[in-house]
Amino acid sequence: MNKERNLIIAGNWKMNKTVATALALVNDLTLALAHVTEVDLVVCPPFTAIAYEPVWAIGTGQTASTEQAQEAHAFIRGLLVKLFDEATARRVRIQYGGSVRPSNARELLSQPDVDGALVGGASLDAQSFTEIVKNAI
Image: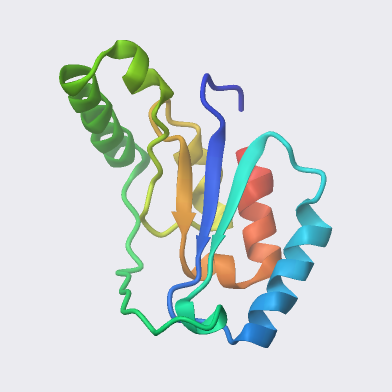
């Protein structure tokens, strides 16, 4: 996918993983994705995996249609144009935060105003997260 802004794919681990399992997952992801330069990658481990107090997070497991995702992102980008200017709105990356899986990542991330994804449960498995990233390329 060739866009003006780099896609950003983030793994939102919520309250999953211990320090040991988080390190193992990062090692697996590093091996699988070390060559990826077309996408900015981020992992968001829970505080408990980095020696911080636990926080609460909840997900619905429901995914917007690609049309709904694009419509919402276009609306946000339009607000940025009104609040700032066109150049600023073009530079801001807006991530989709719904349920992203290997099966829907390519279609969601191909939308013109969707600049990446905050991945929840699918980021807890190296193979699944790797497939999402590869679907973004």
